[in-house]
Length: 238
Picture 1 (tube, rainbow, N blue to C red):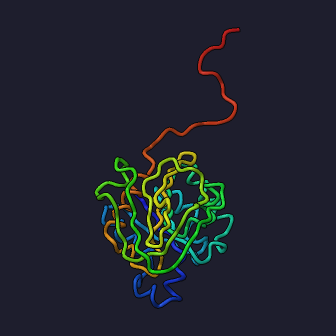
Picture 2 (picture 1 turned 90 degrees about the vertical axis):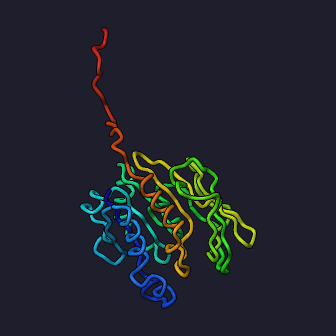
Picture 3 (picture 1 turned 90 degrees about the horizontal axis):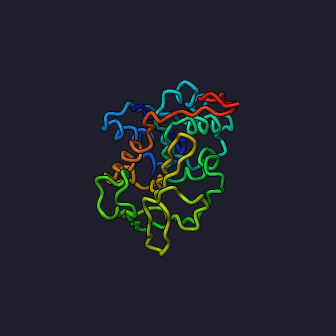
């Protein structure tokens, strides 16, 4: 499987705390543990030509993993539409943390995708609410993170096709932290954890979820339908 990991790659260059946790960038950390699964991984970042997401790169990508936070508005409309179309055509998409506000995710959801948030070093407990789902393979009843950014309801997304995780935070809020959607021939998995100032993507269970999510989101050679005017398959009676 060919996996492309996209990242703004701004925080790591500007915030020493983030660069200490992810010295080569969040994208390289994620690409590294996905490579352990035998996937052919590559990375792309905002400041590359065409944000690293040329038509050729996307055409060869089975699953795109997207992390964004600080500069969603700098992603060009053309590239966001290009990614959206590839998802409709069958490319899988794994959307992480603050990428809920990315142009790509908002275009695919058709809603504002807003939420409550707070940075207060809170404990997060992600409860598995669909233990039969492939994305939960290898996990226990919940994942506990010592410190994370809080996201709270209401999360302005369409009703998910499947709800996989629900988070509880130390301050009392809850959040739909793992949700799946289908758009066209493409499958989308949104997964909440991953604030840049915490070592969340070094956490083995979080890595397992993302590995499972990439595997789930990959298209398995499903039929490609043809639309528009169509000649009959059978001879029509007069």
